[in-house]
Length: 409
Image (cartoon, rainbow, N blue to C red; front, side, top):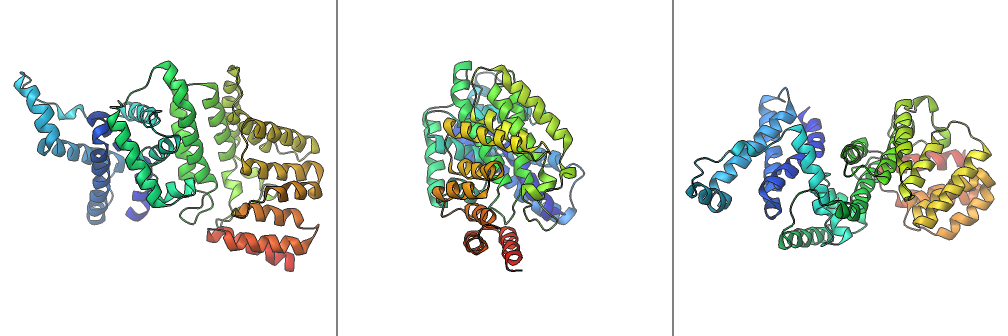
């Protein structure tokens, strides 16, 4: 049980501990906060392995982290340079219980950390990388996958970013209203990246990682709950994620393989999450600016409508056209070709898809395989074989092989 529970708790609790300790120590001590959090989980693996999992594992982690932080303050330079001078000024005791790991302070600390690491003094790539590392518990390899680069590049980028934030003496606090608007775009992009890494996972040999998706939704919900960050585009992103999450159970079969949209069992769609998505989509309509999240949420909403009509797919196609005008993305363009095939037929969609030429993306060849199926099965097989050769997860490979076998049969 420990082997299964600890990775989950690391994903959900590590960033909370780091955020609270970093807020307490200051950004210049962020590595200490990370070390204390990591050491807390190392201790948990040792103690729980011998004594079993405690009744309240999260509370055990918080208490242990707090005690380790207290010990650090006692024996290191923070104690000598900060606490001792205060004692000489007449302060007779230092309250180590100021390290507040209450739910409210955890939420406040994470929200403040989100905006601290998205400070404009560092590059957008560094902002997102730090957020994924500190707030989302991503490993260096996972961040490298998200940025399509290598671990060495990510390590250097994060090191330079931390140094810059220290030099600038960035405080872990919510910025003023104008700065919130300036940094919010990067905060949302980070959450969006986190959700996508879970929804289209290439890490840990899984096609769908619900833990990452749910963490992204939780971070976004924190923004919605705060009056200073409850903006239309935030609601639009949360709406988008609710709609996608509503089809989790229908999207993956019992073997962990992806089920294409046309083959999904609609009875497995989560009606409560669809209603929540509709609620947040309505909330997002309060502004006068349409973001890419508004358009993607509208597309996701249409996918939760069970009818399979030409009108539905024509509407989705128009939304994709609008999305590509706001922000072009090869992946969005690829998804558009699927809607095009449903609205106007496979032949037209094949022409548009082949123009994209996404040679390193196995979903591109998988989609071409689907489009050619029934039109030119020889080309369908060729594309499925190419997809098979570059797919990263075993579940994806197995699903593609089944498509090939079906063609041959």
